[in-house]
Length: 263
Image 1: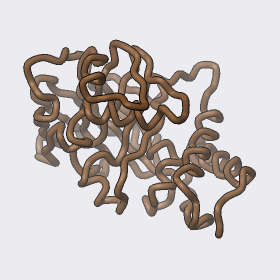
Image 2: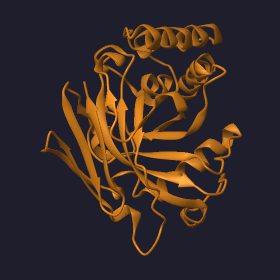
Image 3: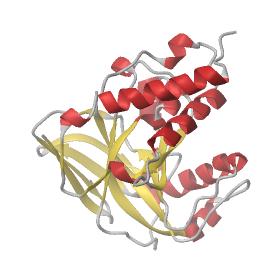
Image 4: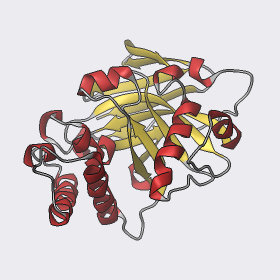
């Protein structure tokens, strides 16, 4: 067996923290510890978050990753993961994003849920998640990996804050109504050229289903999703490598458009 010790877990958290600061990738953690478990990975993630939490940093919500079949197939995994979303990683709609701020960035379009009431497991239902939701917003997420060449297994991306980089949220929160969030369509373009299409159902059968899954998954850790939290429910398509000098636009049914420009 080659599972990491508590000292190894602390060292991996420090390695990832340094890789983020230096924008210099490291070898996969699972190369060092092939028998590393999901629990080990979340312990590394917790250590990384502790290192990132300065006096000015905030946690504004959570992101789910690998909720769609295209993303699971892309990375060869069979289950979702999650990580907190840090306030310092949020861009405004229409912002310029510097490629040099990342290592090997890719972009995803997704639907986010804004909670109007707190939500928790262990038996949170989709109906309860619906009742707790104040609305939906469009988002573009930049995923990035501190693991060299994206050669990752599930434990690697979990450790690395679910491969988060940055996110831009739309300016409008659209209340739930007489529509099914799972059926919301999306068209993703770069410089006007079609890149991908998707629908809300791609992420764990729908955004509200994804939130219920997260509430139940976090319950054993003693975590309750607070009112006001933004839940990023996962990509609706396979992540797209970024390029400079491009305008990226995702247009969602009902939720409207969101745009970022890479420079």
